[in-house]
Amino acid sequence: MLAISNWWRPSVLGLAAAIFCIGAAFAQSMPLAERIQLCGACHGEDGNSRMENIPSLAGQPEFFVLNQLLLMREGVRRIEVMTPFVKDLKDEELDALSNHFAKLPPKPSGEPIDPSLVQRGAELAAARRCGSCHLPTLVGQDQMPRLAKQRIDYLIVTMKSYRGSPRPGADTAMSAAVAGASDADLTALAHYAASR
Ligand code: HEC
Ligand code: HEC
Image (cartoon, rainbow, N blue to C red; front, top):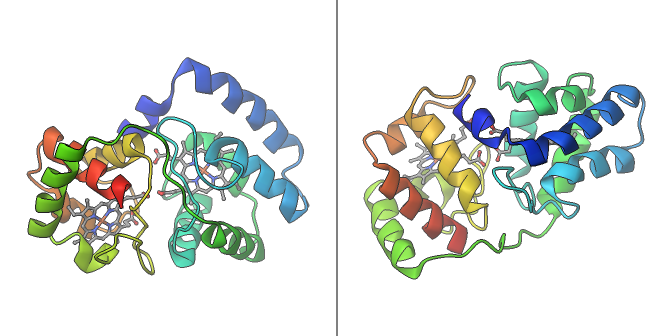
């Protein structure tokens, strides 16, 4: 809930409302390319998000995207603005979307990265063994997302939600991984991950 309330800002709201209408009108039988364009309105045309608190999808492990889309379609991971886009998708469409975004090259978001926070984040990541699941390069694998080049604001907001009351359907591994971390620690981890 935390992530959604933070994200729910008026500038984005107008866009979301407009897209919601498109989503509702064309939800049925839409060609894949058009569907991808709808996703791109929020997640970036090339899968690299330019919008605050909206994650990039480019270069995510295919299975991670598929797993999250399944959780969303089944209403387990609830993201209200995304519901109209995923609720009626067939399994083949989820496969095709996951495959598409997994193949796109990830790019840095352009948010300023602080080198001293990167260094602190590297120490924390080593101590908390983030690389044991997300891989040492933080590119992710299987159901574990890519963290490298992800948006800093999204990384922070999502780690806070794991630390608080974990999002429904989320693997409990992540709550254990960030347990007891301060806000400053999470910021440092986010700068480190985004810099990879
Ligand atoms: C109206 C904006 C919007 C549209 C359109 C949209 N999304 Fe999202 N999406 C979001 C937001 C916001 C989040 C993150 C919410 C959160 O975690 O609180 C998200 C999260 C995701 C995630 C989870 C990523 C992660 O790193 O945890 C996936 C996967 C995803 N969207 C795929 C899609 C696909 C595929 C489409 C098109 C069918 C799509 N989205 C359309 C706003 C949108
Ligand atoms: C034991 C395995 C494990 C460890 C260790 C681990 N993670 Fe994760 N992480 C996961 C899994 C699994 C997910 C996906 C959970 C879900 O379904 O929501 C995840 C999700 C995330 C996400 C959400 C990203 C997104 O796009 O939605 C972030 C951020 C993250 N991890 C950061 C970290 C950091 C930073 C560390 C070290 C402090 C860490 N993780 C350690 C398994 C792990």
